[in-house]
Length: 154
Image (cartoon, rainbow, N blue to C red; front, side, top):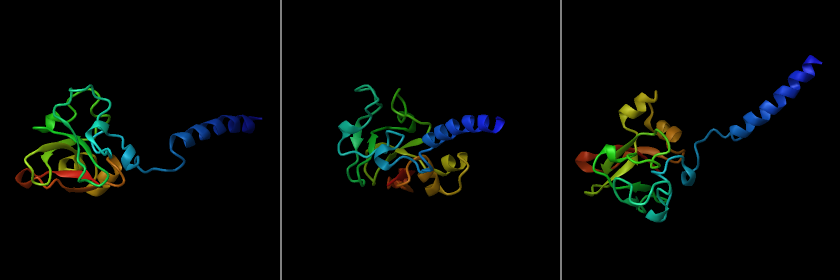
């Protein structure tokens, strides 16, 4: 009788555990469903930051359409402009403010700077991006000239 009671208790737990883990899929969410709003796929800026009150961002919402599948971000002047308002950032994933492709405009990006990678206990920045940003992202240069930063992008 004890054995059947244990089975009765374990079966519901195994079903709940299986439902919560995605049935063995340990990959981060797909690019168009990433956990963070910065870095989401987009076709236009209106699709970005739906959880933020209009006009509340510390900058202007932008969809970088030159990035494959688009990349939701917003303009910024410093790192503190990223994740500055309620609803903007959904995770504690680090973000940095950097020019993109040597333009004078700065944007918030998902960071893979050495200090962020090391603080998370990683030595491989691309693995860090795969784990914390998206499986389709790698760590690359923002192309921001002398203000270049290391960012996770597709």
